[in-house]
Length: 271
View 1 (spheres, rainbow, N blue to C red):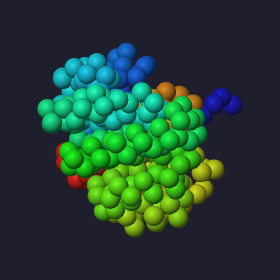
View 2: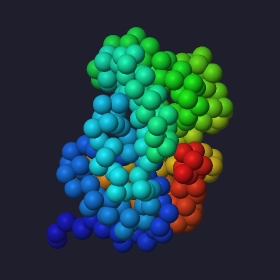
View 3: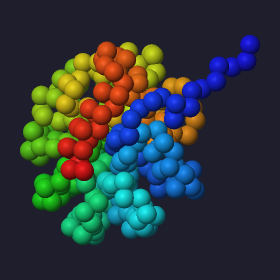
View 4: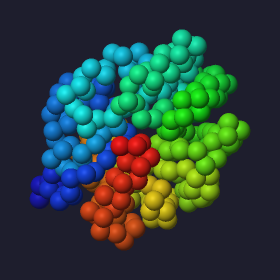
């Protein structure tokens, strides 16, 4: 017997109005045919896409590519991998961009990454604090990246006064205990493609238990493709597979979950 064919994302039957909260459309290979990527997403019910620029240079180099795509909104922040290169000029350039561009809706992704340690940990922590201070000054939501750095991330957020401030935990892949901590502090969580992997039992349990008003969906394109496209290039058109998996875990109708997550995203980002 031949291999089972993967279902096409446009056949999932999800309605228009979905919000993809986190994609890197300026990265290869997605940036090679941006119009087609956004068109495919629309065919699959994705009406809004959060484009994440990793630093002010990436923002200024890439924002013009989205002028013809009003359904794309922007996030901007210096990733912990690049913390060692963050300067005072970068912080000022980030602030200036937010003051000038209404398409910028959140400062992120910022945070800590102790898995790769591409920047020294103390440097990561300092850059995180500097950008959190900037987010407070600008009064904008924050999108957090945290990998193998849970305690330090939470402690810095609380020390910087982010309890009950608008904050989204990007690419949440933790357990129910971490979910409880996120919700206790008034934060939101974004569920990525790995929630579709059957062996991710802790994450799947957290997705099932998450309060309905706290969850949104993301692809983190071009990374972290959901089943049945695991190992392939990810793109916003595949967001529906994550939605179907989360809906099944929660015992919800997929279209209901899809539009609920979209409403949550719209509220958080002010869309």
